[in-house]
Length: 104
Image 1 (cartoon, helix red, strand yellow):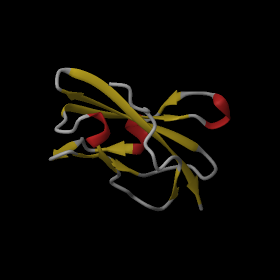
Image 2: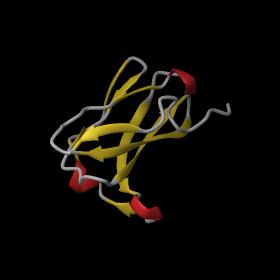
Image 3: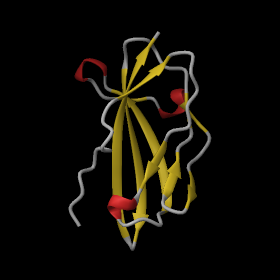
């Protein structure tokens, strides 16, 4: 099953003072996900730096076909973050991603 790994909504914007629990609809990958996890990278300037423990707090949760991500917060203005969501669906492991641009 070939599915575009980037979420269809593309790059999102989030204020540096905001705390957001982003949600992923897994229907394009077949739905009913298990074994979910999330990671975050600062990709500003083309350099990829793991920042999961700095900007994500909590764990993923599943309700039907939706994965709710850990809280995304403590972003730095002008930085771009890539959030990757790993999931198992029908014994296949998929990884979706989206970018978040931090603004004042």
